Image 1 (cartoon, rainbow, N blue to C red):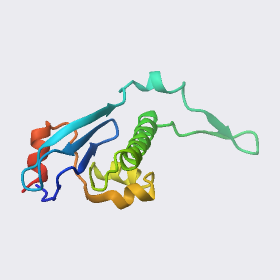
Image 2 (tube, helix red, strand yellow):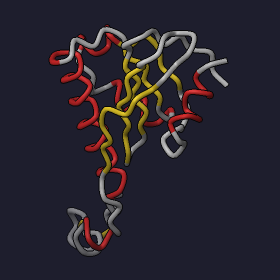
Image 3 (cartoon, helix red, strand yellow):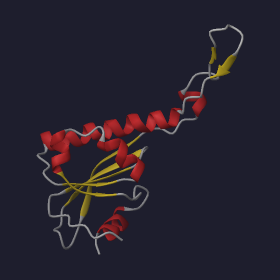
Image 4 (cartoon, one colour):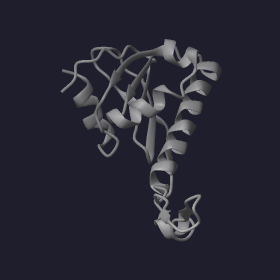
Length: 148
């Protein structure tokens, strides 16, 4: 469990590379009551639907030798694009809803991708980061994990 203070009207963003929940605390810091404001997700399509055919090949300058090019990880690219979308959504929270306190909950890898895409205003609004994967938990369990 993680002990995090989430004052009233604070925002909580719980995400990973495929799904995100944007929540607001309707309770107070002691008795958290998270309400879902928005749910975002991306389709989980197979590689054959996302990408193209087999990886390419390169040829050396001598014209005789060649080697294969590493295959693109289409799911990783889709996750990165989704996390960029979440960073943009968090920017809208700060600009349009005047969010001044945001708690960010995501797996460590997703946190790293998000950090590189957050604006200075969003970074200033983030009060804490929790490097955990809570996205598949019900909201009541997320509340329990965030309070001691």
